[in-house]
Length: 179
Image (cartoon, rainbow, N blue to C red; front, side, top):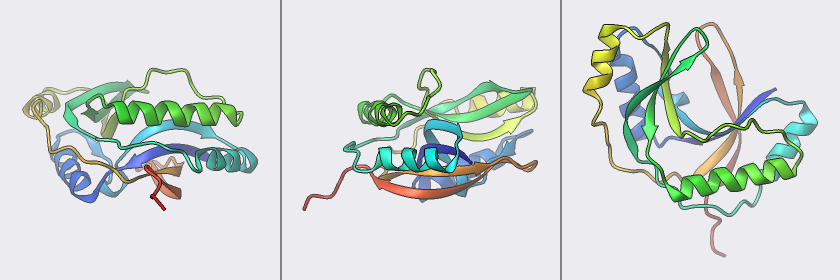
């Protein structure tokens, strides 16, 4: 199964980003209910390794995390572009990424060696068009109030012609409750 760890977006922020994505021309938008910030992409894992990944995240002490958006951007993606909301640097987010990565590596999972560039994918386009470039420029100052997610999750994804579909398999609190 194809798995990744991510922070789900709180409803109000997901709705706001969904409205922006659906308004961008020449874009195949991501469903607002599927918007997330990927912490670690694990790729295809068998059931045994999926269970190891899930166990590795249990009891992780991390947080608080503040997600602060800082405009829109794009990455090359296959034969097209991936448009995203840029997430500003945050020490709590970086710490969560590193702690989770260390636990996953300790559980024997091989993680891709890529620089962590936190973002929320809004959709995909076959190429940058003048209309899309103009629309992106209109959102250069995008900066809704920061949000503090209370949890992260292990997700399964399926690639479909209409776009990826996600299912959250396990939820983990960001800060363990005080007993």
